Image: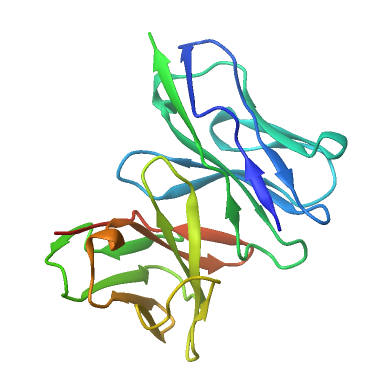
Length: 115
Length: 113
C-alpha cells in the first residue's frame, strides 16, 4: 500500500532563512507527487506537482521541489521564507496516469516563522 | 477560478442527529468530487469518491450507511453524517476535480456533543 512520510511535525525558521520540508513516499511505481499548503480555516492550495520530466519543479510563491527516485523523496524548498509562509504543508501522492485521484497525504508539517 | 465552497464551515449537533455538509464547485463543473476527513494533528484521509449521477465509491473501512454521499448535479455534492456520535467529530474537507488537479474546499468542523 502506498504511504507518505513527512518526518518533521513542526519546523520553526527565521524570516528570510531557507527552508526544506522533507517528504518520502512508498509506492509500487513512480507516483504523481504533490505539495499542498493549508492556512488556518482554509482549504488546501496546490503549491506544485510532479508527473514526469524535469525532476526539479517550480511552484507558486517561490517554492520548488526536487524528485529523487533513488531516495523516494520529494522535498520542498524555498530559499527565503516570508512570514506569510507560516502554514501547514502536506505532501501527497497519487496513482500515475490517473490524474489527480485518490490522493494519499502525509501527516503534514507545521511551519512557524519567527521574526 | 476553480473555487470550491463548503457549507457550513462549523456545525455543532447533538448525538443521534444527522448533519448535512454541502460542497459546491462555484465556477466549474465537477463530475468527480472527493470527501476527506482530517483528525487533529493527522493527515487527510480519503473517505469516498463522489461521481455525478452515480453511487459514491467508499474507501475501505468507511461505512456507507453512516456517511451518505449524494452528487446530484455537476456543481454540488453532499455528505450526510447520519446518527452522529462524538467519535464522528472531525474536520471534513471536500475537493472537486478539474482537469488534472483537485481543488479543495475550506472544510467543515463538525462537533458532536
